Image (cartoon, each protein chain N blue to C red):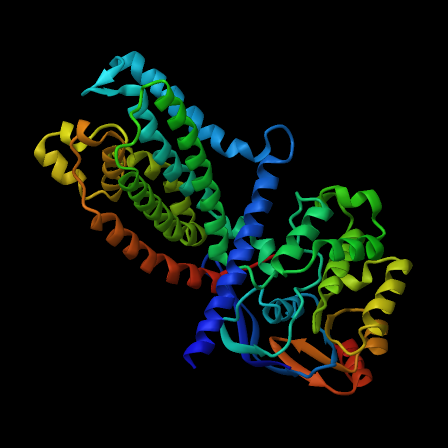
Length: 265
Length: 215
């Protein structure tokens, strides 16, 4: 009995990974085509964002702040932020946009969310790697002092972004009001994203308040992982884990419910 | 076998409700060729979409013990901005088939030639029908769901469908929504009339067609 249900789960896993793989390829070829650099475009936007903001900040704030290169600090803040913003934008009405694919019964609606999120994730990671190598080579960024802490922070940040998408996608299908609010919300989130400063630069009461934000916890981990002893970081690993788990627990049933109501042309 | 148990479907939009199907019970046996008859808007396409798993019933259950094609119709199943070849590639991937085999069959069956390198949105409905049939035949389903589209093709397409679907795959199950009573009489062994949300199955196709014509 146990082995039968295990095999069933294993089967379902195989089908879904195949479907998500196919969806990613399909999405990349519709979005970027096969001309010039093709799918490498996915990393261009985060890259441009990070480098231009970095330049802008270094003009406004000078080359260093709290002993850290402003360009490198901007890059480490903006790339995760791009992941969040793009992830959210791409998840709006994702079921309706892809509804003609629901004709194939092995495609489940959360595959659409996963496929798009993975594309954004890959794009941002490639951009991060690219910009990181350049900044390290030019001496703006140190070689990461604890790469595992950095990766753990990135994983938690990404997990939280994904869990937001899992809630927003079904909500955007049922409510047009919701859909209109999403651009504003991504803007309101900015101060709680941890992109602009370390918590140790703030007042204790502000710090305590911002530690409620899963973004900030992930961001602090990433920056501690890069700069190590040069910065003081405040974070709680459990905050993003618990927040993500809660959102997923809401998002998955919501997706299921919306799937039942979805009218496919 | 496909069994619909007490299947109802209701669409809701902006506070309005439309009950399309109401407590439909239907059993489709292996090898059946079932015609779905009904006036425009009666719910033929809806029933086909429910059986195909494209939409979910509001209440009731649909059980099946054979592989069922996606509904072959005017809409759905394709990504319009992708080429015919890209769609074939996508379908080969998600149904775990060899792309080379699918490609060969599609080229042969559709006779679309260089058009297969064009986005599907530039296709006429006849061309789409060819592509949809070619792909679903290449995958080999136990049951084919055909929503009207069989009528749009030209003589050559009809001939091919006849050879590939109704002769070579005569053992397959088929559910066919159509207004063409001639086709229905010729191809189907059972008929279901959908009217006012109810589905009534008839074993005598001629009688069903006459009843439908009188609606």
